[in-house]
Length: 250
Image 1: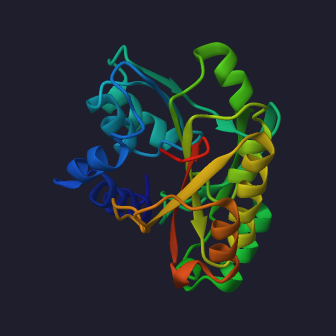
Image 2: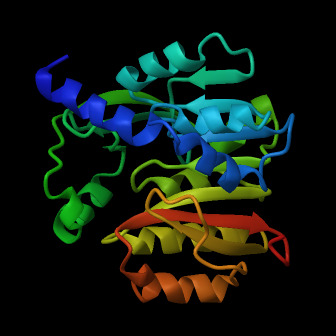
């Protein structure tokens, strides 16, 4: 590892596995994750969410295509029989893809060349990100994961602009899920809503950045969330959109 990559990893460790972070994640996910349930962690990174899901008593299938991140996931969770670790990406169809990596920002790795161009132009936070190299990775689908492991109670999707492609590989509604959104590429979040509405009847909420609380006390209709995204998502730099299947979102 280079000095730059070591510093980048240290920043990620502090951001995602610092003391006190787990408590907020447990409170956020508890309504969606039953004891002895099943969770898919798509884009597991350093496993902070996997740790929270396990603490809540769920089995976890964690996917992370970056070899450097998978080494840490194996250190943290490799001996846990309740965690399945897969060094794969997820997309619209199985196959292979080119994953762009940043040596200094290991938290961001993307299969989407279009997303990388969009956020470079429109998001100040990505101005310093330099995509240092690409690697070839295996790609599976949500349908294939469900066939092998079962229908998850919750699915976390954080794949740097590739979220709608992940949902294209799904042919049935999930009970609950989250997808990341980023300013400068909000039409991609709109595409996620469109795909989910093609699969079923969902209600929506959002979390700003790395906060661990929902923005609204009530779950929003699809039309409301589409309008919110079209208006710029309150100017948020990034966040996660949560979707719950069912007419009430409860």
